[in-house]
Image 1 (spheres, rainbow, N blue to C red):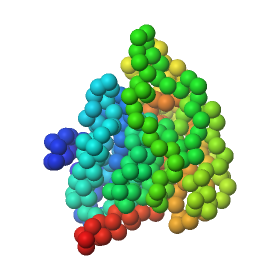
Image 2: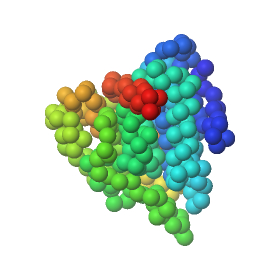
Image 3: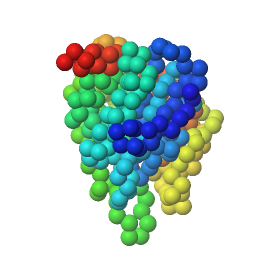
Image 4: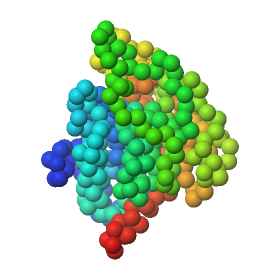
Length: 300
């Protein structure tokens, strides 16, 4: 199938849906629900974290929706959006077969990451089914302190958009899952050397993996603030190097990792090799929660 604009029949809202071009009936896939940040849309997120470019190689199904709320900016907020996200997940389960969903991941940039964290705290539907969370500058379990100038640059008279966003709880969520945190170097003061999520699963001390070197830039940036942007918020896309740390030996084979993109801020789209490295971590992690949860639901 490749790419289609799918429709949530419960709401009539469209979303991007991508899968392998040569997907065979009954083939196992890894499902990623890919959420944009505040002020953005699904099309931007699809280019910011372009996992779609690796859907064939790693057998991915990726759903990328847009939030409904537009004022004072587009963002994920309220039960209508939460219900839309649950409906998208149901659509994917029905289309590809619950038995073929090898693993289910949430991925979210900025407020999309915070929304992922909120769902994992508050929504039993996601708690029971999510195998992993990829936070793309959307908050860390065991927080990394934000740089003092990390917010969006403002023009005269503008109000900081953070005032309108419900903050996500940063305590560890009450479920079992893998967790990957990716961030731009200029967004944070420093990356913590330890992880409470790794401690939960009795993982060993973090190990640094070989640097990820990209000779190509990402596909997107914040064009609306390009003339006033800062290194913390993000400049033009370009080549880059990312550092990766993995906490080995986590119970149940769970993947716990931190990735820092050097000399990058909040909004430069991810480069191809670091995108692939994140996808490789996702598909290396255990799954199976969807089948268990859906079996329980069916028998209830």
